[in-house]
Length: 125
Image 1 (cartoon, rainbow, N blue to C red):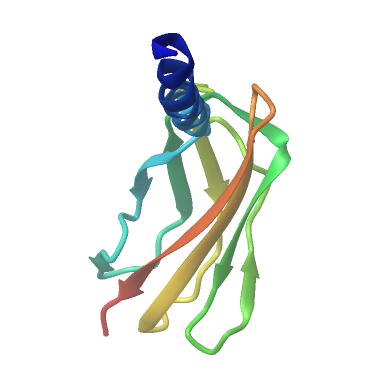
Image 2: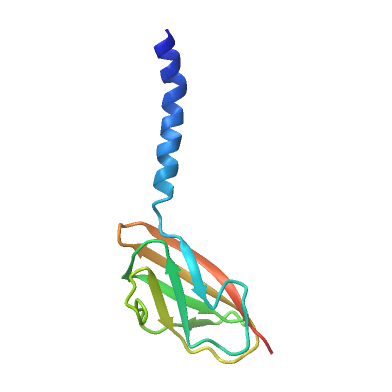
């Protein structure tokens, strides 16, 4: 009887703990350049994103949305100057137009997990 009660309560708890461990396996955005909510004086020439896991570039993308809602495409993605596979570097040509820009990203980590997200930065007048 005791063993049965233990299984009734322990099994769901074990399932929850194992599920939370799996969720932690996804690549998370750790840093960006420009940073989230940054106010910069000039348009950046590249967007750099650093993730918690190695990223597969061929299945990843970065786009920028301008203040007027126009989409600004980036150049070919790379792992940056250091060839760090946790980094996604996107060359971009953004006009020096003041306003808030959105960086939209989707990546595939090398272990097969898909992640996406976005953040904003502003160019000061």
